[in-house]
Image (cartoon, rainbow, N blue to C red; front, side, top):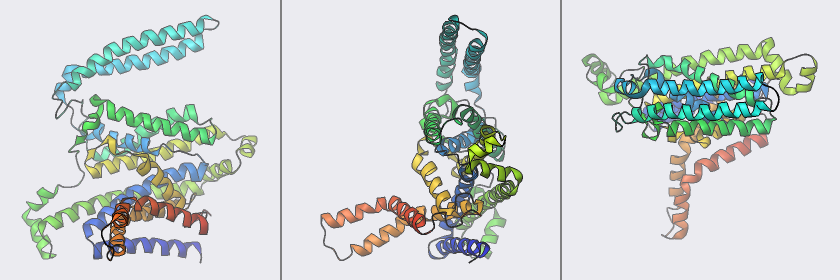
Length: 432
């Protein structure tokens, strides 16, 4: 079977699975799987760019996705005037002092020599830290005291929510640049540890800095790029069209909204996929794969290995940031506690490995297939356990089997991964 036929067949199979969900369960469920499949495929493309192209082992995907979510709040939510009046400028001044302290310490380290250098740098950091905390803490306390139950943060810029998607990419790219400048010189396993640690720091900041995005109190009611269901249901022309299709207004409005998200997400995914394919086949893509396969030889030929790694690390992280912004837009809320390594790092890696590392189409296929399995395994597992335990009398064994349903997702992911690694070690769509 040639590559084109194999890819067509596998994508057709995934499409049939989603269509089957619509026919035998509900079209709302099918569109929900499709939308999250599109977002997951975009995240898998970002990781594939880093690992498949350059061999960079990034297990901090969750942090870049969370930064994308934060971008939605900072871009689209309206500013909270009372909070800005109470302490917004002091918060900004405190942040500026913190940055100035770090810059001052670096400047002193470079300019001063001899035994005094360490003492001067320490003095700059200690004095700067206390000044920073004095200004910053006062501002934060004032901001968080403003209507803490419903607000207590600075809000955003009040811009259209679609602008948050590229902003999420820029925010993630900026974080990737900082991480890359400090950690890309590390060995692969140490880079993995560094990215995981930094991702946890990002999540900790989101959970604890209420002035930024309300912390664990969450930000609800984020603006949407598609109409609200209640507005559609109140529109006589829409209800008339829905009746013409044999749908009630409630069902028609939810399908319309989800379909709108599907179109927007598909446009972004196709654009990124086309760019990734062009990059893969370009001299730059061939150089990246040559560096991945033999860094020493590439360096001996005069290639700037660290510089190229930094480029691809920033690009892949930016794509994850865009995907994170899209996902938060779909959810309509920012919930920092929902960012778990299992979902936003482990599962994305499974998608890339199962789909085919180094193959962009494979990453997209893995995104759709693994997300479908992740969603559908639990109800199917309940059905299976129901059949298995149907003839059993009440007891410890039956209770244990029914309680095991909640672990079916992880078990299934492990089984899929093992089967693919055993029978197709390079993924369903291997790199060519």
